[in-house]
Length: 196
Image 1 (cartoon, helix red, strand yellow):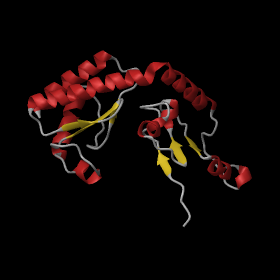
Image 2 (image 1 turned 60 degrees about the vertical axis):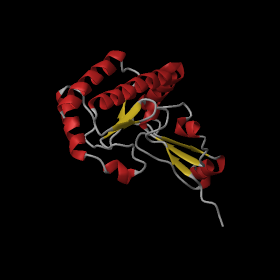
Image 3 (image 1 turned 180 degrees about the vertical axis):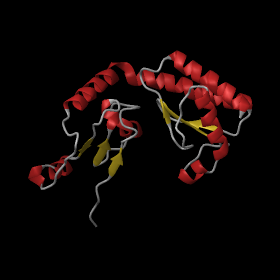
Image 4 (image 1 turned 90 degrees about the horizontal axis):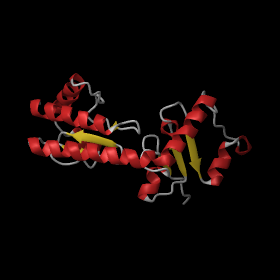
């Protein structure tokens, strides 16, 4: 039986937690990986990487094509290079630190208020699930208090903190996020947790 290539979608995870992507953290080496705008800090740039045999089949010599509107756009390439310079210069460690402070702070506030919620995340990212335990799959992620999640999001917006409108939308910090930004967010969350 022929083995099908294993692909890994790193569109959301790549470079936010490690220069080697999430695959470096979890010890997986896929045959093919897809990357997106995290390569260039949000600028329109994407890429793929993989085993030589697969990559050679994509080029003109292999009969395949890799085309796109923004291929080799100079501003996106410059943004990608600057992003990797920042990441190699300590940005990943910094966003891990502020992400941990945010997650720990939110979890502490939730426990103090006795709310049926939990915080999960990695590196600079987090999600609050309004359920007693962290979900293990998508069905469980939707099996929470979605009304409470909506009220929380709207109350945070009234506090000046913009969060995703979907209860399964993850939040992310960037290297420009300051400790004061995190403190302000936690103070707002405390007021909102008390109110909702």
